[in-house]
Structures are given as structure tokens and as C-alpha cells.
Amino acid sequence: MRQKIYHVIALAVICIAVVAYLIPIYWILVTSLKAPGDINTKVPKFIFKPTLRNYKKLIPEDRSQLLSGAYYPRQLLNSIIIASLSTFLAVSLGTLSAYAFSRFEIKGKNDLLFFILSTRMLPPVVVVIPIFLMYTALGLRDTHFGLILLYTTFNVSFAVWLMKGFIDEIPKEYEDAALVDGYTRFQAFLKVVLPQATTGIAATSVFCLITAWNELVFALVLTESGGAAVTAPPSIPSAVASGGVDWGQIAAATFIFLLPVAIFTFLMRKHLLRGVTFGAIKR
Image 1 (cartoon, rainbow, N blue to C red):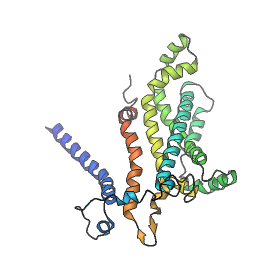
Image 2 (tube, rainbow, N blue to C red):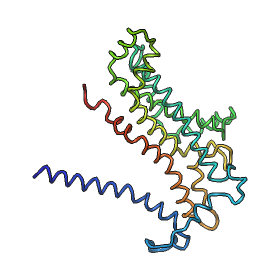
Image 3 (cartoon, helix red, strand yellow):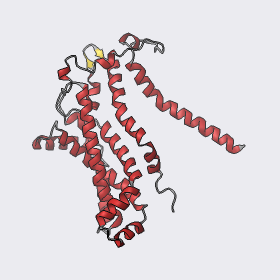
Image 4 (tube, rainbow, N blue to C red):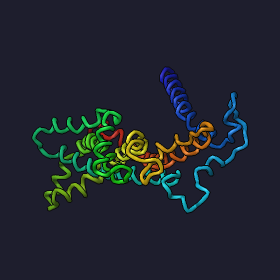
């Protein structure tokens, strides 16, 4: 009886937490479907006539300007390109580095791992000015390559530490058997270790993608308004003019911005669940 009560309480707490997390998303979606008269009211309207005008505002009237950096479709595409490539590079480099730290005796391994981790200790706003000056001198401002390089650098440390924990849990005997069968070390890594680390790679990819996708400070400082590489996060608040804040347009842009990473996380849900619990039970 006591266990049943605990289960009911746990279920109630989970339901409350889910509702608390979903309310902001619901409010964003509802606001994006409201007309300005329904948004700017003292008492919130829960019954209203839905409209897509806020989403239409995100698309330029001149379709030839659809991929111009001044409009949201191009900015969203920039986010997809930069976040995807930086995540791929960070996870790839992090996996290779984690394998080396996990399998080989490296002099000063713990110091090197701490140094890698230390790159995540400072918030981006602390180093944004020197990076801005460096990027200006190198001509990397407002370029896809510049942001991809920067996001990869910040995410690779996280990928190394996370992937090392996954690879440590893979028995070395599997690789030893492959080496005895004539595989090279790299072939053993590709055909033995990598398939078993798939769940860890998926979990690491989700976290790295979310970090790169939501990054605002560097994207705001290192790109120019309407530039070639401006991403979605700094462009969403731009719907502020002398006439006031267009909350409907901001909500529409925000909801669209949430979809790609939400879809990716949903597709990776099985790997993500297995990845975050990988190694919890010792064999």
C-alpha cells in the first residue's frame, strides 16, 4: 500500500513538472496564432480566431529575397548549417580524443583532461571581446566558417568528457580480440568500438546541437544585422520597432526555431535514453 502511494505521488509530481515545462511552449504557439488585438489585451484570451499572419510576416513579399540575410528563412538556414556542421565536427573530434584518453597511457592525462574541461569554465560573455578582436583581424566576422570553428571549439571539450565515460564502459577485450584477428587499431575502433558507442554519440550529439543551436552571445557580436552568417537567435528579438514589440512575429519565429532541434531530439529519443544511462549497471 505504501509503495502504491509513493507511485501515485511520483506520478503526480511528474505530471506537474510536464505541465510546467509545456506551458511556455503552449503560450508561444497560442501567441503566434493570435492577431495583434488578441495579444495586447489585459486579460489573456483563450478563445480566439487563429491566424497565420504572424508566420507570413517572416517571409519576404519579394520571393527573390527569400534567402537574403535580412529575412528569417535565411537566418534559420544559417542556424541549421552552422549548428549541424559544428556538432558533427565536435562529436567526431571528441570521440577520437576520448578514445585516445580511454585506451592509451598518455603522460599527464589528468592534467590534459582538466585543461580541456577548463575551456568550458568561463561564460562566453567573458571572452567575447578578445574573440571579436581576433576575428576582426583574421577576417572571420560574419562568416559561416568563423562560427562553425568557434562552436566546435567550445563543444569539443564537452564531447571529449562525455564520450570518454561511454568508451571507458566498453570492454577492452573486444578490441584485443579484433587485433588478434588481424585488424589494425583504427579498424578495431571503427568496427568494434564505434558501433557500441552509438548511444553515447547520439546523446553527445543532442547536447552539442542544443548548445550550438541556442548560442546567442557570439552569434550577436560576431555577425552583422542582415549579414551572410547571421543566425536565428539574435534575429528573433529584432521584431522591435518604434511602434512597439511585435509579440506575434516573435512568437512565430520562436516556435519555428524550436522545431528542428525538437524533431532531432525526438528522433534520437531511444538512443538518448540509453545513452544517459549507459554504464549505470556494471556487467
